Length: 334
Image (cartoon, rainbow, N blue to C red; front, side, top):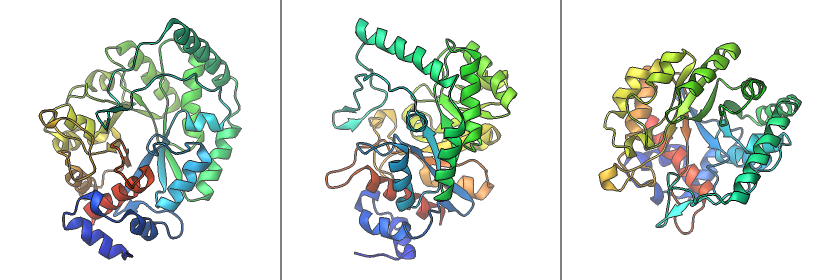
């Protein structure tokens, strides 16, 4: 069945589950011409390559998906951008992506064997050597390839650790700026104020803000220490994780902290008493529509990043689900 853009938005606004919308029709609607996912002043983007589950995640493939899915901006996380630039390959590590049929990134990983620990240590040392000697020309080339196709970078995600030398911190911020990013992102370190203080100093040096991303440790005060250490230490708020952690003040938190938010991650999750699961958009407890309307109404400048974490239902795949998420967001912003 073929829908016009207006008809597609009206279907979503009538309260249909995102899973009930024809994904093929959605792809046809939004893939014409160069991608454009800035809606009423709100930049909708996508975190890549994680969101394209079980699909090739190399930089060329990700760009192809984004263009045909109508998404014109991205937060790209390692290893996609570093693989493009020729980084050493990471050794495999067990990662329980699914528990009881649901993708649960917070599930504990199996402990590493001594051999695996040795391999990870050797890999980290090899990555440090590569990062501190590689040419930024590869990132210039990557940016040009994406920009020529109508896609821009707004965030570069990579984990920074205390063991890393200063030159590796400089690499991370220089790479982000070379790609044209407005900010850098990483996971919030647990109980490590020395690390966030050090990162803040490098952020000041490079004049590029850092957005810390929290999972189920998120509370209204999770970012307070880091933000007190530097004006460049900021928030990358995942509204799905925030809800699954049991917080009820998502909209109020954004309103209060908007000046220190560099980007949002958008997903739908249940409250913990309802299971905390990742679910198709519109089926959980996360106030996605209210958040997007707030960003639109207040003209907040930060991008809203689609992050696909729920498992695609039978007969679909991650790309079709991303297109549905984009359609849901468009309808919410109508």
